[in-house]
Image 1 (tube, rainbow, N blue to C red):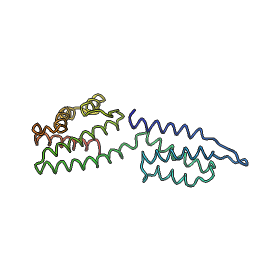
Image 2 (image 1 turned 135 degrees about the vertical axis):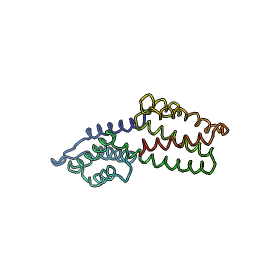
Image 3 (image 1 turned 45 degrees about the vertical axis):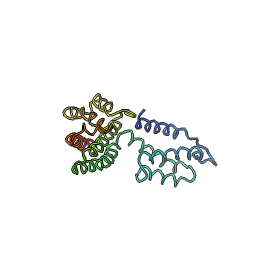
Image 4 (image 1 turned 180 degrees about the vertical axis):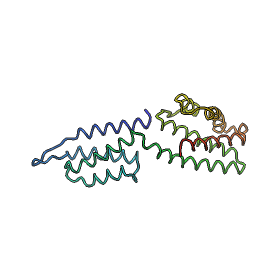
Length: 215
């Protein structure tokens, strides 16, 4: 099970937990049982923090509603449920893809910038290592964003998984076939087998891959 599936599973579990919270009636007034409410809300806050981040509407709106929930009255609990359901729908609908990709693209872009600087300074080995690291990580993240389980798989296996699902094709597919060889040379410090052109080809590919899939 990949990370995306685990998160969806947790959303489903908390959805079921939300529907199973006990309701008490004190003096004829319905209230959600405090133990159930706090257990559920704490788990939701943890999930929203990890998935969306602290500085997002999903997290801040839920926390605000939770802070305002003093007695467990329906009027206090319903806003919490609404925010949770919105977060669940946004995640399951794939509406975080662009955000995740953009952030990943910025991170990989830093690696590419360092690799380009190294190559221009004549350090083709350093450039190859940085470019290959950026490409391998980018391929894995791209695969995971497309629900492929590539945990603990090497670059060749990741490439094959992407090709099998039709996520890379044409010229990109042909170029990608050559990347694991260069990556393996860099990983095993076989510097004599790596040329400046090899480092440049990985750099060019990873730049185009980032522009196509992480921007």
